[in-house]
Image (cartoon, rainbow, N blue to C red):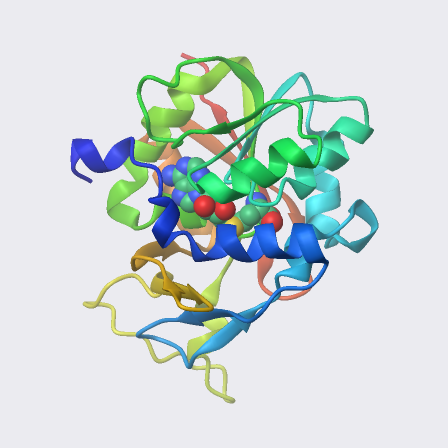
Length: 249
Ligand code: SAH
């Protein structure tokens, strides 16, 4: 990743998810948030789903919120649904996102500390006991090549003894045949590396890389980068919650 890319936030004119979130916040309805990828058919993302309450969250997210302690960083916080739930539990949370509209909505809806910040910005240099990354939180890593950069950032932000709670899905099920064999090209790119582009009304965002990673691969990269990965919970469909902690040095 080029260094000027690292600290970037979205241009407000290219922030489709943020505008969808703002519309939903104002009007309790939003238009279609369309998702394009070279790997899948066009799909819609539920904007209402981005405003889920604790009760509406999948169990692995509830577990992550319960296990969040100390000063918490909600990375890629979106509408702020997890930050609001954490505040209700009496916990201290800072929410960051690169979407200007999403950060505005978070401020309006009562997230006490919401900031327009990129996780990879080296100038963002505070310490947190828990770093929370939910709704395929590994997506923000982008590609496997970016893993060292990701671990550098969380190393910068984690207090001593701190933890990262991150969820992802193993996309292997997309390539499985009925007989259990798998069609993947071992010489091609990793099967969980996906490209996406979003559109809301007439606003199209830039295309971006989004990483889905199976637990074993995450664990290998963690170990290469001075971290240990532990499987905390498994979801209903190839999804899981992992905890990353620095290996004692
Ligand atoms: N965590 C929220 C939103 C998930 S969508 C939820 O579970 O509902 C992913 C979010 O991550 C988007 O709002 C996007 O703007 C944000 N994001 C993507 N890259 C980021 C980065 N490098 N730093 C901070 N936020 C990022």
